[in-house]
Picture (tube, helix red, strand yellow):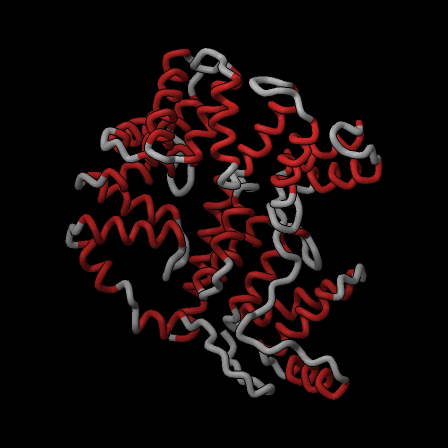
Amino acid sequence: MRAAVSALAITLALVSPAVQAQTDPLAAMRTAAEAGDMAAQLALAERFETGDGVVQNFARAARWYGLAAEAGSLQAANRLGRLHHAGLGVPRDIPRAIELLERAAKGGAAEHLHDLGLVLESTQTDDASLARAADLYRRAAQAGHVEAAVSLAVLLQNGTGVPQDFEEAARLYRQAADQGHLRALNNLGLLYVRGNGVAQDYERAADLFKAAADQGLPQALTNLGVLYENGFGVPQSDALAMQYYRRGGEGGGTKGAQSPQVIYDPRLAPPPTDQAGLKVLERAARSGDPVAEFQLAFMMLQQGTTDPRSAIRAATLLRRAAEAGHAPSMANLAMMYFRGSGVPQDYVIGQMWLVLAGSAGFDGATGLNAQWSARMTADQVNEAQKRAEAKWSEWRDAEN
């Protein structure tokens, strides 16, 4: 990476893989894991799965989970089973996933009961498996697992694996909705629209849909659009209906699946707005100062211009700052690749930069990672992680 000398007298710690390797905080953990310490193996696997202090890599996580699971860790068996179910870092293997999740569920942990139920529900079609999934959800829900309660309510609502029971489904949804659970808010709203298990109440349905829509749930946005189009529980409005339909089709509002348009570095003061300050900023960016490059790109993106030349220049500036190790620049560059703004749309490259941003210390990477990886295939996620590790190694080798 380029050396960073700030012409703006702002001192920031840019990531340096070479220095990090010399003071590797995970060295002791790696040594213990390689010596067969189950707790260290599990902890190292979790670090690789989340990208905490290392470049996120599901394949490496799976290796360490496998060793910990062989040593008897139920948590490791559960996590490895989830990776096999998703095909992340390992081949997608449903029988192997169920085998591992069954092993973990024997311990009775609510999370493990839920995870086994989820895989059975989503991959099996026979009545016995679906009934088993419902039972697992019920046991997890009784232990306080909210997501399991909502999943059980869905089965009760549809009569899948259990006799149909709208009233019990409504009770479970209501409990979860009171805690702000988005799927519960939306599904309870649907029960009020249809009068299933509750008295039909369009106004109550609209309130529930809006609570979920305000957090960006696409289904709730679309359902709220239907109510506005027909004037059910809300004043009829074709304009609002189209607005909600559009937001639902785009994946939600700004608080939900759609990520912030521009991410600023909280360590920095706001960029200059006066002409003298802007000239200094431009000069510093031309000289290769990554902080100035980031701030200049941020200002260009924040203006929301539709000029493609502006977006291309912003992407160029962010790429240079990202290559210099500036984590927020990596995150913003990732967003540009996800949206195809200033660069060809490429989820793999976008996810690569987001993984690197997390490894470089960007606090918001975890949430953004979850949002965008959900739109990708397992192969795309695995490829992005491989590229991120290769890029990290490239930076490390260049500094050695």
